[in-house]
Length: 436
Ligand SMILES: Nc1ncnc2c1ncn2[C@@H]1O[C@H](COP(=O)(O)OP(=O)(O)OP(=O)(O)O)[C@@H](O)[C@H]1O
Image (cartoon, rainbow, N blue to C red):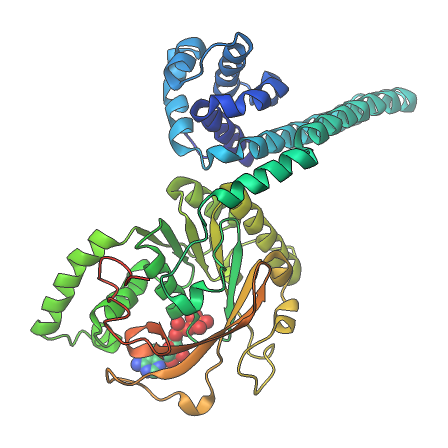
């Protein structure tokens, strides 16, 4: 199928959820109408689902394909296979109704402009259009309003379920509970302070347990992989860059290669100039549990908008995406040198405030420590490291604090202070985290 518009993506997501969890979706299906779906295949398929629901019959991909027509079989399979989250069926309903409401309003306005009618006739038509808008808005309120008792019941039920916050396996980091599904986590710092290294370390750890997506907008995927290899093998990255590896080191890399393939569930992509729409499409395709975007300043947006508005629009859209998909999105954010006040160990929330609504849209903000100018020597030995740290500067659901870390830029390696390599770390090529 060719590239889908956002409205078509919402309709596909809804159809996918309806096929996978028909019981939970039944109320939503009955509240909608086939007219809300784009004419053609999407409307045919929804009509089949709608009729089957109405008749009280079972809904599954085969029955729906039989009812809608065999030519729609591929679309039905795609919808069922690529549905981002079955638990968000009510959210997809809201999106579809909102898309429909806007398209009705636009066509009513266009029709009124072109009609050549008298002013009175145009006013009557617009009034009728507004009445329809009010009716749709009322229906949306009805369907999204939740009774106090129902929310209370669900909340208490949720307390019995296991914690679904994503864990790095590093206790000093996990104790802050920052990586909860639907959270946006901002990782901010000055250029060159090690954000990408820290981000890729987190991503590599998460990918041992969760499906992880890392998008770099400033380097190639291969360069990022060099960082992971350097860390996993503890081989100086400069040797990989300068192509001065000896045969022993190549043997270590070959061993690590197999282990890394086996133990990591990660998609690494580069995408210079990608837009939020592009990112949405990639995430819908790969369906990660956690996605890293390195860095948000490089996401393309409306070129006519001011920098502040462009970034605000991007971070709002990413927040909506995290909530719709039920995933964690980690946004790396490069702070302008001038923005960060001189002398501070860390940047502050105030430094972020100049750059759109990044802080407001984030659940968590972590700052990577600024490197003082007098510690910028090159490091090469295994024991050499730069004492660094990460400050949890905002955390809507938990405490704030500083996490002391060791950064070995020669291996692109970050470890919590006090860890002993490789016992505590297990090595990135290792199969799992050390026991907790
Ligand atoms: N062998 C080394 N010894 C010392 N420092 C090093 C070494 N290799 C790389 N670095 C430093 O690591 C930093 C790059 O780290 P990283 O790319 O993770 O930072 P960043 O914060 O993501 O930077 P940017 O915002 O520019 O992308 C640079 O400051 C570089 O000088």
